[in-house]
Length: 357
Image (cartoon, rainbow, N blue to C red; front, side, top):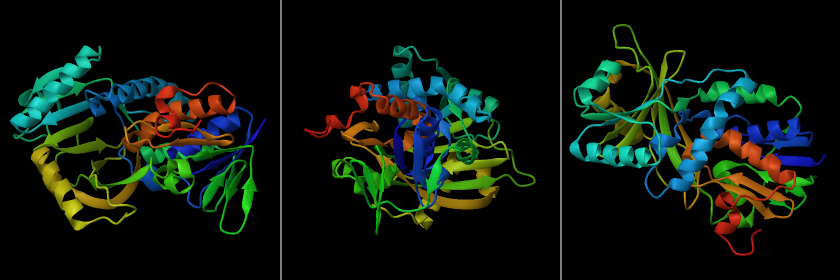
């Protein structure tokens, strides 16, 4: 048994802490506000197929493996997944051409996808509007209520000691705070976009990518939200709508590289609603119940950074848009690495920096 300090309490940190404790390690999770940050404002799509694109085969393979792991992961945590799949929509001819590229790419890799007309899409989801020109039905995607997931992970971490402090640096065998240090055999950096400031090897690798989201609720007299996840291109701009079991609808997400700014802007709200109205005209009559912004942890190749930074210091960060999706397999990988198993080349930090193990 080893003592392990997990630095960062989002979905990745909580998943790693839970699985490390279950493997018999003594685990401390360090975060002044666990279960918040980007994980709290996520859309909840478990959608590697509709996130994929030619040239990003490594990301698709990682995501598809994680998707297969999700049903058992959810069962262990005791909550339900949404299994209705994803509907991908295009509004103009350029959007339709993009959908054709995605459909051909997925079909070539043996993934199930059905091409639909706009009329067929409206038959599936009556809330969609007449501007929808084309669609893809992707039944293999899943979705999860991110806040229910975080609550379940907190309950599962009953053998984990929580340390409500902000780490300022990570070194082999210790986590440094403003006035003291905490010793551990292994330190795992899972602080998302804030990981870059904790270890020199992550400074030029992980970056913050701001995303704004809205949460809405249907009112009396409005059409109900869609029954499945809807992802759309509106003049080549992406927008998604993810229904929740409680009747809410998550609308997202902007994508801006503006450092650590987490304020919601009027322009972000305007743009999200305007694009969503092109797909679902009735959304303008919904109640706006929450606006929020989070910081995704980007990496240069959109593949996470999971591996040794140096002896005693592991990274599990850089998941960009796929933190929720990759949580089960990231936790599995971290447990395996702590146990001494080889590091997967696809996610190794060494792909970015010579001399990093």
